Length: 210
Ligand code: NI
Image 1: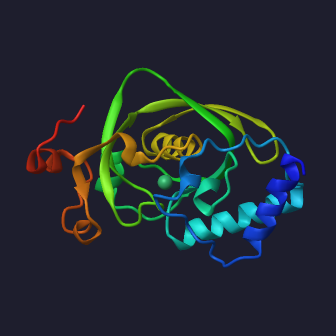
Image 2: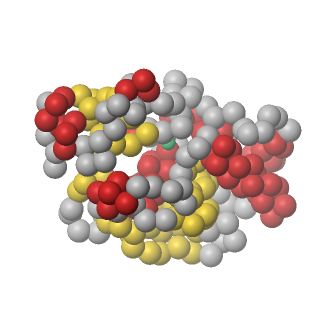
């Protein structure tokens, strides 16, 4: 059996399963594999169906990004979309600007400049937990969209963070791998100690910001 037919079979199996799709949680080895590059293993109709199901699953969670390994598919595809309402002060502190729905195929990023920013971040595969993660403030994103058109653009702030997070998933990483563990915020504390800049948390919990 060829690699392409294995991918097709797996996608058909996932699409025959529950909706929203089940989001794989930390500890499942699929999250730790380097995702197989996408090179046309799926025909347009099946790829379209997969992307619709992933987008609906991301909305339902709710989240701002979902990588294929998070639905149990080791393939280098992710969806991102951030059009949720956010308080102005939080948006300003995090440079959070809306991200219209888009698909990342075989994405890569590299830093633009050396400025780094630290913010609380979460992941649908580490449900409810948050931790401060330092990321590049600006990146150059390359790769492809779902139609095979090449991407090459510079992103800043929160949109750059989302792309870094999702691209890292495809390399078998989770944000907690390089998060500030002293900042770890349990689900039951998420509201009470929410901190848009992480400055209060840094003082209260005893860690340094970049
Ligand atoms: Ni994630």
